[in-house]
Length: 168
Image 1: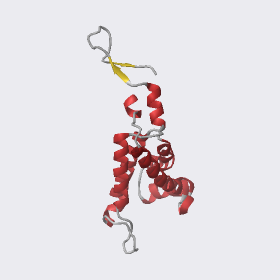
Image 2: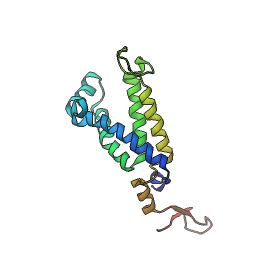
Image 3: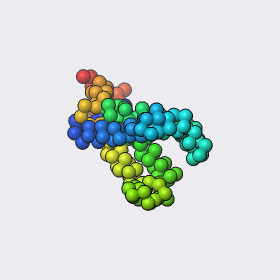
Image 4: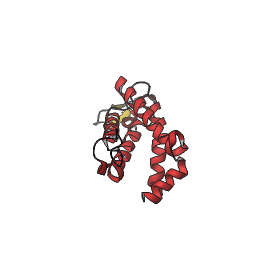
């Protein structure tokens, strides 16, 4: 568990998670609450399941991941899990919707839809967060300190495992 929560005190993790979470929370609010011109939970579930043919569980997880997950990401809670889920969500969006449109977003309204450049940026930011953790001022960092760093013990001691937990 310690490895899942551990992070450093880097500004990079803080900046990445707050900016990425802030951008994704707006997309989640469209899907969950109907804010910013979105369809809300029922409309999005209907679109995902009926028009796109996604299983209801996948549609539900995308909505919750983008809305609740992004709030957790901003706070630095379950950073690695959320970052990994964003990679899966964005890969799914690329494959199911955006790949035929090409790389570029539809800046000038000359394409049928949006390209996948935005999704690649989200994947890259998420991959970085998965590797480094939540960074400075993250709840993950507090949890890791509470759990305590695993300390190596002498493996030659009978009945002892290779790791023990050091108390704070």
